[in-house]
Structure formats: C-alpha cells, structure tokens
Length: 119
Image 1 (cartoon, helix red, strand yellow):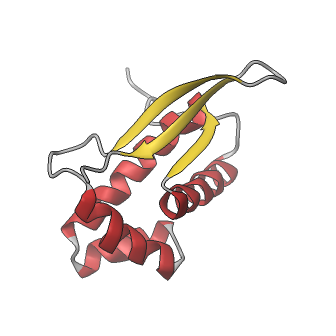
Image 2: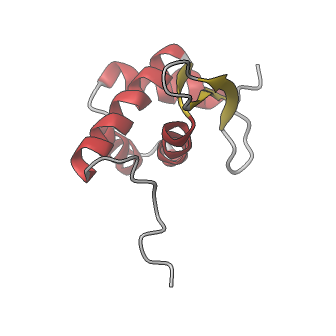
C-alpha cells in the first residue's frame, strides 16, 4: 500500500509544514535561490513545481490556485511574468537541487535550490 507516501513531513505538524513551504517559496521566487536542508529542499521542489505548472497555464483559475498558496501579489507577478517565461518549455524539471555540504552545528546536509532558467 502507498498510504502516507505523498509528502515528507519534515518533523512538523501540517499547518507548520505548509507555512514553512509557503514562506520558503516566497523567498525562492524573490531571490532566485535558497539555501536550506536537503529534506526541506526536496519538499519545496515538489511544492514549487506545482505552482510553476499552474503559472504556465496562465488562466484565471490557475492564478487563483497560486493565490491560495502565495498571498503576495508582487511575488505572484514575478513568478508569472519573469520566472516562468525564462524556464524551458519541457514538462517538469524547473527546479534544481544542488548539494552544498553539511551544516557545521549538527551535520545536516545542506542544499541549494534554484530555478532552471534557459537565459
């Protein structure tokens, strides 16, 4: 059976996990890259990939779906007008995760997550 295989829990309750993913998504869109732990980066990649798919469609219903997750018009505008046109038109793979070593304090694996822009 594949119960509870949908997402990583990242050692947080659902509301805290979604709040973390939403805030990291905003930071990723604003700055273009984000340094975080590998587990958080993998969860964030799945979350952002869904938003990029909605932004590609560009219709009103898709923008409303994005607005449910990101409640910042400036960030949504940047995603739809600046980031998505620069991404390749292939299906998937818009977000990359690169290893960046280990954190000094606890040895957690650190990763850098970025968008795969073609320009």
